[in-house]
Amino acid sequence: MIPDSKMSSKKYALFAALAGVVLACFIGYFILHDMEQNQEIQSMKGTIKSLQSSLAKEELKNARLNTHQQRNINTTIPGDTDHPNASDKKGSGQSATDNATGSLQILKDLESVSDADPRSYSEKLQDLLSGSPTEERAAIASRFIFNKARDQQGLPDYALQTIYASQSNPDLKRVIAQVLSQRGNNALLNSQIAEAQTRLKSEHPGDRLETLGQLGKMHTTKAVDAIAPFLEDPDTTVRLAALFALRDTGNQQHVGLVEAMINDPDPSVSTLASDVLSSLRNLSSSARTNYSRSDIESELPPIANP
Image 1 (spheres, rainbow, N blue to C red):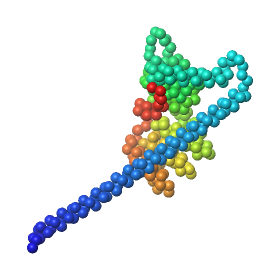
Image 2 (tube, helix red, strand yellow; image 1 turned 30 degrees about the vertical axis):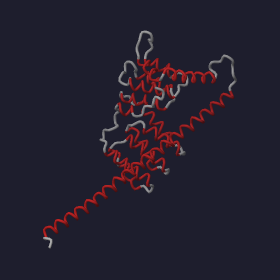
Image 3 (cartoon, rainbow, N blue to C red; image 1 turned 90 degrees about the vertical axis):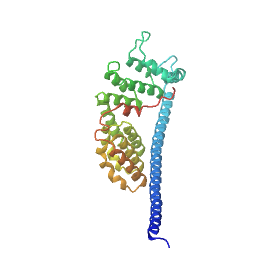
Image 4 (cartoon, one colour; image 1 turned 45 degrees about the horizontal axis):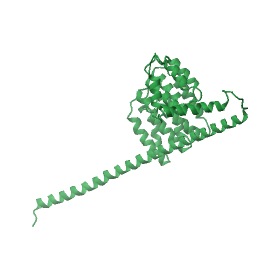
């Protein structure tokens, strides 16, 4: 006959084993759930970026078509260096020079100071960006401006403002605005946000989608007021883009904008809202109110030809 004490020990061991199995299953379920949720969020982010990229390509295609039509209207004048074809050749020459020299070498030359090249930093930048600069040259200029952000004597505010006014590349203009804001001058940053608010009035979801992506890249709470109304946009994709933009610009002061969205009838929106809510709660109320170097560097356009 088995003593009561031994029987009790066996029952306790069996109960503990069963409890361990149940606990392991419980933990495993939540781990798998979190993994699936993260995969879903990454998938949504990829979809948003893909749509933004498609919009950018379509705009480029339309711009090229308009340019081609304009060329057919213009009369070719022999020796006319202002003819559009001359501009094309200049752009092509820029690209060939970049490929032959290497973008990092061009960047190094911009930063070097020597008796052989007496030009100032701003003069070098203006030469680099003259005509119709390629995206690669805009990326080089963006990196150079970031590297010289603290050198207000070598690259003064007025020089950056002049370059900003003469360029159209959105990444380059954003970097200039960010650097000036880091220096305490928010004029261009405020101007960019105001322009974005105008574009967000478009009736086309694609326009709102692209603009929200640009606002997210600013990484400043100044952009939150422009983003917030589109958290209630009737288009699901726009609401998702607004959530991503808020995640990259807001802090814990803005959790109230997202809390109701965790009950959104669209599961993709509610899932992303939960992730954004968690991210914002982890940021202090002073986060993203002033620029750090990492804020600017995280959105620098990549240099494709090292």
